[in-house]
Structures are given as structure tokens and as C-alpha cells.
Amino acid sequence: MEIQLNEEQTLLRDNVRRFANEVVRPRAKEIDATGEFPRQFFAQAGELGLAGVAVPEEYGGAGMDTVSYCLVIEEISRACANSGVILSVNNSLVCDPLLKFGNEEQKRELLVPLASGRQLGCFALTEPGAGSDAASLRTTARRDGDDYVLDGEKWHVTSYNTADYAFFQGKLVGGKHDGEHAMFLVDLPSPGVTVVRTPAYTHTISHHHPIVRFSDVRVPAAHLVGAEGDGMSFAYEWFRFERMMVAARCLGGAQRLVDEMTAFAGEREVQGRPIASLGAVQGMLADSLTELFAARAMVYETARGIDAGADVKVQHAQCSMAKLYGSEMAGRVADRAVQVFGGRGYMRENVAERFFRELRVERIWEGTSEVQRSIISDQMIKRGPRALA
Image 1 (cartoon, rainbow, N blue to C red):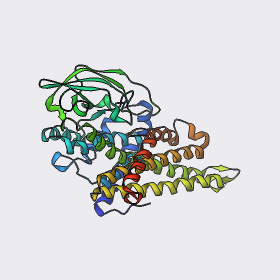
Image 2 (image 1 turned 180 degrees about the vertical axis):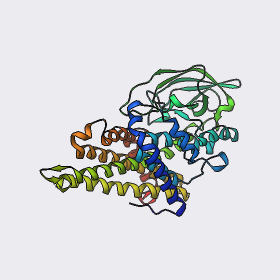
Image 3 (image 1 turned 120 degrees about the vertical axis):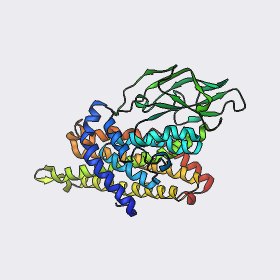
Image 4 (image 1 turned 90 degrees about the horizontal axis):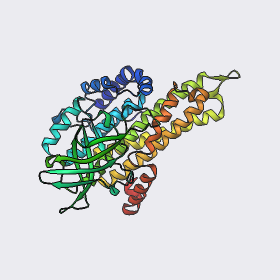
């Protein structure tokens, strides 16, 4: 399916596709095998304006709309899901939330180096007892003179090993906003910030997800993002923004798998016939392309709505729908691709095996599929189905 694009978006897609095929794709297997962070890729992405896709031009970024941002992430993820995560997480982390809640000094300090690919950040949100239900956080932030003191343990801190700073979300202790959430910038490294351990995950991604302990970490009051009590608003902005990028990454991964298994099915012969002539294989190919078509239509229609200024509650529900359907679709396509490749599909050197591992997490982070269903159904009751679809 070709999305209806304007001339500028078409040129962008073609240029990013060329960059992805020539620079990103050749190293994808190596990056997966070694877990190496592809700094050269990120530096080149910065030179092309891709490191700051969504960063406004006044802060050194490309200032692209949501449709263009989805195009970039989809094309990069088609070549390498790992690189797609690196690009989207760091854009989503600071761009939309920071633009809405950060002060001018914070924007210039963080957005400019991000857009050039010189700096990266991470988001310390999840805890042992608080994942998709971010309101259940137990980490704390206590005002002490001109500083805040942060305490608590964070899990799955994606990108911590490459980050120059962390966004820390915790509950305020004492004061007018006692019990409410606040967001802080924490320079890395900082005294009191330690890695408890770095678990191994199913995917071998260069951005680690360690367990990080914050013990009496002092940050200046100037590092408060927005105002006391804004923390959950920041998190909602992040989730909405990044859920769209999860969906875009899933489009790229599914497209790559559809291309690869279609080519293989046409070449692989059994008893003198290509397996593409077998009804069971035809069904897997047809279902995969049909679901990809539907997911792509949903993602880009949602992106156009965001660019047109759709109601934020509608955006929230539609981003959840895009994330839910896109990630579930990609999981089904990945499973079918492994099946079509057969024994080859279970080999680490095969693209189907790699994407099978890398796409599985898309149904979990930024809110599980079950959480997305809860968000969607809640908005259906409050606003009515026709407001959302």
C-alpha cells in the first residue's frame, strides 16, 4: 500500500529508504549479534536531520509533522528494528512532552544536542510494582531548600547505558502537591544513581534496560520539568507520542517480513513446486499483507488527524488503537514468517528469527495490549464509538 503523500513527504521517504538500505540494513545482523550501539548510524542520522525528526527547527531539528515522523521510523525499522527503537525513543522522550512542559532553558539545553545526534536521554518511569499503571509509582521526590531529593528504584530504564541524562518521575512528599507526580532531569552520571543489574532480554538491543537505584539523589529545583503535579501529564504525552512510533516500527518490521517470506515462498520448492502454490502458505501470505494494509491505513490516518489538531482525547484513544492493532499484527506476521521459512526461520542468521524476537516487545512496552484495550473501551463509553472511528 502506498500512502498518499505530498511531494516533500515522498522525497523524504525515498531519501530515508535509501539511507536505511545503504547504511542501516547492512549492519543490522551484526548489531543484533553483538549488542553494539551503532554510534556511527546515529551520527549520520543527525547529519541528515533524522536524529531530531520531531524537534522544531528553532532548536536545530527538522520540525517534521507526524506523518513524516512515521515515515522515517517505518523506513528505518524496515531495515533494522533495533535502530528504529533508538531513533523513535529518543525523539519521543524529549520532544512532545518537553515542548509542552519544559522551560526555554531546558529546551535549548536538551533539544539542540538531541537534534544533532550528540546526546541521548532515557526515561526512568517503570517500577517493580508500577508498569503500565504509572500512577502507582512509589519513588519519591522531596523538596530540600534549593534542591529536590529523589529516592527509589526504577526498572526497564531503556537507553540508560547510552544516556547523558534521565527523566525521573516520582511522587512528591510534603508540600502543597503531596502525593502528586513530578518530573525531573537527572544528569548522568550523578552521585547516588547506580545500576543494580542489567538483565538480558529476548531481543539483543544496543539500548540496555537496567534496574537503576536512585538513593538521595539531589537535583536543583531548576531541573523540575514543568510544575509540581505535572508528572502524569508528561507521562501521558510520552505514551501517546511513543505509541504511534511503536505502530510505525511495527509497519516497517512487518513490511520487511512480508517481502522476505514472499520472495522465499516463490523460490523454495517442495516436490518440484514452489511452496507459494500451497494453499496453507498462500493463506499466511495473504493474511499478512491484508493485515499490514489495514494497519498502515490506521496509522497514517491517525497521524493525519494529529497533524490536523484532533481532540487530544481522541488522539489518545486512536494512538492506542494504532499501537494495539499494529503490534498484534506484526506479531502475527512474524510468527507466520518463521513458519514459512521453516527450519531456516529458526536460525539466528535469518531475518525472520531476528524480527520475531525484536517485535515481540512491542505488545508490552508503552502499555501492554491489555492496557490499550482498556483505554480504548473507556473512551468508547465516554465519547461514543463514532467519535473515535
